[in-house]
Length: 250
Picture 1: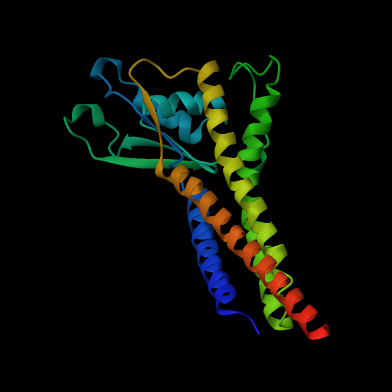
Picture 2 (picture 1 turned 90 degrees about the horizontal axis):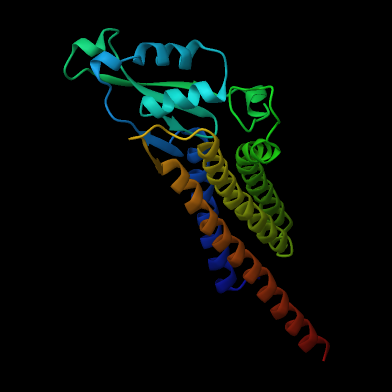
């Protein structure tokens, strides 16, 4: 029979794990990891239509889509890149045009494309650090979600077998998942910082962290707290069981 303290720890840990999974899933599927605030175009300098066309229908190029995001209040996620553009084609004739968001997804082959020290010049040396940071930033959240899913299967099997021992494995899996979530955020921030070193935003463009990144960041402590509860429950239950067994033998 399971002590009420251990059962309470398991319930709270499961709720925390569920919250972390929801937050991380939303973060992975949205584009607000990093956002740019651009100054409004002047009429005589306006080339927004050209930037929009290149962004949506142009060849996949890091320098090209970065410039479009710099100029058009872009947002960047793990699987999406977006710009904020007027809904009308002759928007510069209107004093206050209606704005809409245009997004383009990163395909799986594009996620594995190499990064270069000087974007748009593919003849120069490949930047291995940026290349692997980019790949880790979208792979680690998937690994984290897979580990949580695996821990759920282990937990279900433990319930069916009426065994408390697999709880230790559930805690370890949540610990690894939390580290993967944190690693994804760190890789993303490091990659954006390196990109700005090689392709700096124009004057007047400000960058800031988006709410999607904060959701991913919040999932880390939730997963770590869930892991701590599972590990504590497994270890305490094992110690209690050992004492009871020794008392019965004596």
